[in-house]
Amino acid sequence: MSGMSEAPKPDLATVERFRVVMLPHLDAAHGFARWLTRDPVQAQDVAQEAMLRALRYFHAFRGEEARPWLLRIVRNTWVDLRAKRGQDQPLEAAENHPAEGPDPEQSALAGDRRRQVAAALAALPEEMREILVLREIEDLPYKQIAAVLELPIGTVMSRLARARERLAVELRGRLGRREHGLPDL
Amino acid sequence: MDCPTCEAMVDAYVDGELTAVESAEFERALEGCPECRKRLDAARALSGLLRELPAEPAPDLLRARVERELRTIAGRPRERVRRWTQWSAMAASVIAALGLGWLGGTLTGQGGRESDALVASYLRVAMAEHTVDVASSDRHTVKPWYAGRIDYAPPVVDLTAQGFPLLGGRLDVIDGRKVAVLVYRRNQHKLALSLWPASSSGNSAPRVSERDGFAIAEWRHGGFELRAVSDLAPAEIASFATALDRAVDAER
Image (cartoon, rainbow over all chains, first blue to last red; front, top):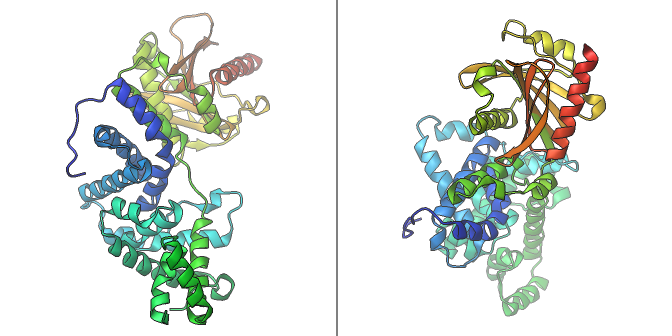
């Protein structure tokens, strides 16, 4: 959040406006945090912290799209949190225990296929996972993805393409290619 | 359009990032390019798989935590915030945490501080991966579990017939003291009930209040101070209190 200065304690009117503008996107903030952290408890912590940060920075919000604005804060919150506790939990350890995305089995309609897709997505490196979540689950256009990830659009496109190739590889190992029409590489 | 050109456009086409003119060009090129047709189908299939993943909405407790922070920051009196409609719509679970505590002297009569301690205890129940230390719907399993763990025997009743099945029990530490907490369920909600020996005699009717978006019922019955905390609506937690009193009386 460079370039955003921190305001003094928000007043009642600011909090009320924040409630109206940002609180409806708590589900999105949590969902994104869920995929970033791959842990239900941490996801809640990240989402809560991000909402607080968003309120602190809310004076800098200029009426752009609220959801990508908030998702960018979610991501930065996660990056900071991970850096802070980086020593306790080496990245390698986290990557060795993937497959902890939202559990589709909680859905009554959950099938094996969804579980496999969730596991494959959760197993991707964070750089690929986050961009796929923003594109396919949050349904953001390239321009907004670029804003959330603070990347040029060209990089968004190339990274998205790489992430899709990698996910297809992951999935081909888990699902039959023929039934699902997954790409040959 | 040659094949490398249309290949490069597949993703942007699927993502809806092409202009109308570009899309039309791409679609024309596709007719003469079976390879890119296959790539397009594959890209759509992959996208479809991701899009059918179920959404996981923000848990009620996260919402409650955020609401509490907002209220604290705004410094508004909590009485002004009545969000039960929203709450009961979203909360599919009720946690009644019965903290069976030895808190008689500590907790009673300290208003806000007691409520804070109870809500904190409730959040530990609700947030924890395992909500109970002894998981059983059988009170004859739960009650003996407390023997030797705390210095009183909490009355444990099952309220399944009244719509509050017992999930189990746990110990909590509130204000440095060990407290017994019984966890009940209502539909998908959990409810935590704390109780400890009363220091004064006589029964008192349940008094229902609200704290941080949670309903708290406080009453004295059968020689115990009782505190139920949950994300249920106040009327439901009151009916829990009534059902509990009846069941406790029936035991005697």
